[in-house]
Image 1: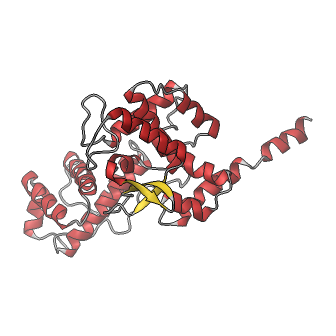
Image 2: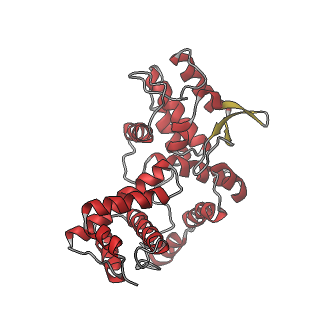
Image 3: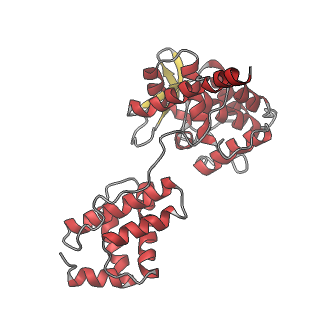
Length: 309
């Protein structure tokens, strides 16, 4: 199958590329953040075609593009870009514009092991204790970290939380959250007394606020619109570094890993941990169990004892 004349014009002219991109984006049924990711990834692919003078991409083109990405970018980024390319050519074929030359072209091979480390209970405690809770920013940051450690929240879930989302569930204080891929706040995490107390302490210091306002706001302008995921990640990273924990493997997502790991270490079942972390697939939760099994494997020490004793 060859390109139609209209599609050929689209693939070779910048304005045509813009029109084709617009049609593809309009076809997508996804959230704005996801659509924005697809748009950026597609632009990267079109730039590659233009830089290499390619007007009629073939399967070999897609493979070469993937390999060029692998040489410069992280596997997770490559995977996102390749998903976009495959989806784009599948759509183009459905529309009769161009053959699906990206069909079954593999992306990057992703390691299922966690890329970020979990904290030990002592490390988590040290980080929290290093926060000066005598200031509004300190009260807020302490509450954010305590919430993320205690409930395994993602930064997006913290960013989306409003004051009105505080409530009760099963006789316990709770925070209703809009989880990953969800449109409503139907999930919740229970708030143990120390976590709830930290949030209440911050809110008392912050002063009167409307229930529609964000649970956590900037202290510089008290922005009721809430904090971005980038700002929350920056706060967590800064508090870790201030406590002496500075590593590329320690980020805001480490607090989620900390919650899951500590729950399993202290008697939580794999099913309970899956529910806590709101994993749709239990195989995702099993990664935590695998990591714990490896950590508790003392083979190296036994071998060293046999050799050096």
